Amino acid sequence: MLIGEPRGHPREPLGAAHLRRLIVGQALAAVVDALFIVWLTLYVLERSEPGFATGLVLVAVALPRVLLLPPGGVLVDRLGPARVVAGAAWLRVAVLLALAASVAGASPSVPTVAVLGGLFGAADAAYFPAALALLPALVPTEKLARVNGLVQGAESTGDLVGPAAAAGCVAAVGFTATLGGIVAMAALAAVALGTLVRAVRRGGSVPGAVDGEAFSSARALHAGLGYAWRDPLVRGLLAAIALINIAVVGPVLVGGAVLADQRLGGAGALGVVLSGFGAGSVAGSLVAGWRPPARRGRAVVAGVAAIGAGMVGLSAAGDVAAATAVVSLVGLGSGFLGVVVVATLQERVPEHLLGRVLSLVVLATVAFEPFSYVLAGALLPYGTTTLFLLCGSAVLVCAGLVATSPAIRSLR
Image 1 (cartoon, helix red, strand yellow):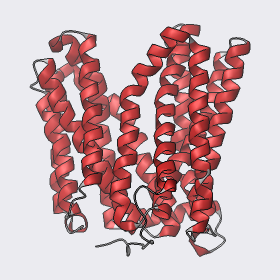
Image 2 (tube, one colour; image 1 turned 180 degrees about the vertical axis):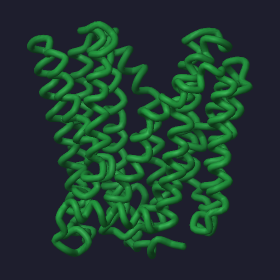
Image 3 (spheres, rainbow, N blue to C red; image 1 turned 90 degrees about the vertical axis):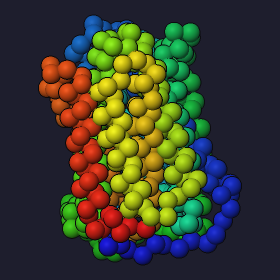
């Protein structure tokens, strides 16, 4: 069953100026996120003993990001995605500037860093669903998959190179100069994304009241959640995303570290393996965007199955090359699946609900990470082989369930 009729847009070349600004702005914003979290971790470790302080700051960033995602989706539907993207991007710049001023003037306390990190996470809670909802307002329907592939490929590239770049810059020029560079990139992203407000207005997309009525925020949030729960396609895709993240994120990071130590030759091997995941994710995003599948239902099943097969394969990996190859398969499936799912929802969810539904997609991606780490910790005493076999098998079962869903199987 389709969620709604695809929205039409006038045809425009993929290389239109506002599309280039969109891709550049969102790619820079993704790099800023990747750089900032590594910078923040290293800075707190430098200023305090490892342990509670580092965890406090990282939780301060993550908690507002998770809790405020659904209200962020309401804000997107109420004000329009272009305005929210621009506002959130400039809020991130302001937070980073305040942090840079504190670091340059004196060593800020851990609570001060935690508060500023929390504001950054709150800005992300509005930015993420707005960035996803912005594409249908700017991109012709027939080109949504391609632009999604480019945007998500650029974001995956940022995730791939960002951590190493941040650590290298801190070692080379210090914390203050590195943070200054992050601020400059965030400002460039905000400038690029801020210009898109006019492009959306020219395209005729004008934000209005949520659901066409002056709903309260609570009622609007309830309406979005109710829609996602009642629609079998949205419900199935969200459940699959949540299960994949529970079964993959913690096992790959935590179990991968143990696997590297026990079988692959040490901690340095983990970096190589995770780079394989990043490269696979970039490739999957670009492939899904460049050659959108004719039968999306089958593509969703294939993407989930590739992730599960890679996890099962990791249980038998005995050297760095094999582990990198199977983790690349996990990344390939993740990147491919992300583009297909997001493009499908962008096309088919009613416009007045799009911000709220996409906020739930982001929530399903990030909210279950703590449970994934707990799962990995609970299974690790039984060995990495058991960990990867069980988690990979769970994802393969998920692929089977997705294949039996009429709403997903019939998706084109």
